Length: 432
Image (cartoon, one colour):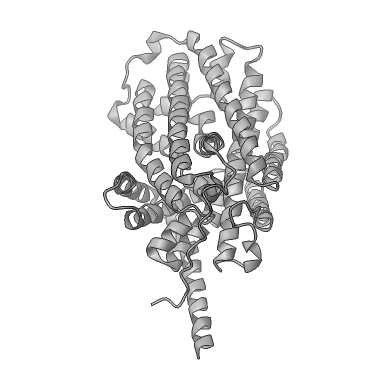
């Protein structure tokens, strides 16, 4: 039996939060829509042709149970620990520490990836040398770090503006590019068979991930029982519509040429709006990167503060874990982690793949514990519980796909076990 104390997080008052449904939906849109819109529609069209449209529709449907699971958990247990809190309630402190470490140290590896992706797109669109992207990327990280220093009252409003601009520009690209579509590009509908559709679904899995990120700021929502499910539902519709619209015009306009360019969004608007198309696409790249980082860096900081509060990281980081608190110390640690990961990326010549694999494998591990916890603590046979039951099967498939990439989550799990062992030893000595 563990000698650790299984602390229950303090539940915030229903009126203590500052985030409403609109800001909450904006945070979800940023966390989920992500940088995938810059490249994934074209890559999916390349591997599946027009059949990639079916892949988007499938992922919209499949994302509902996963989004519903984390919305139900966050609505019932709003706390800065997010998934770590849910796991603590269901599976105990050691498992919770694993989930916390996976997200804080592992998923955080993706922050410089987002910055460099956005910067490289900006540089490619504007015709600058690639080395300029390595200078621009840190600025894309610094802006959301500064925003989160003022708390969610400020960064949530900033996110509402960013997500609103992002959706507006995506809609503009779709509307402008649509007239350049050709019916011939939609035939044959399945040039690579159903295997191509399956490959496109695998690509889009990562585009529809991110529902767990906002759970770390669930305590900042006003009336989370109603606001979080509403914000999640709005985000599912918005994200699904954006990806579906982009996929339709990508297939109709680019056809077989999809995926052959590093800047497919630019190819979409060049045919009909060459004068201002580059500005629009550059705006998308910048807004996406800053918006995603604004949502995730705030989540990392809140989680770091909760880990300090619960004794999984130094207690000095615990300030700001409470609802309404600003976790500036934890945010400083997040900044150091992002700087370290970015330095490693630069030293490897900007190679993104290893960092993406670490990010996604840690996210899959977080999902795995999160959905199991949901089955244990959500009301049995309720809507959230059924979402969790379906999600267990979906996440099980993701774990299989992750395969050997789960090495980093395994190492972080060993670190969590080591901390548990040290704490148990100290507790035994104190008892003696």
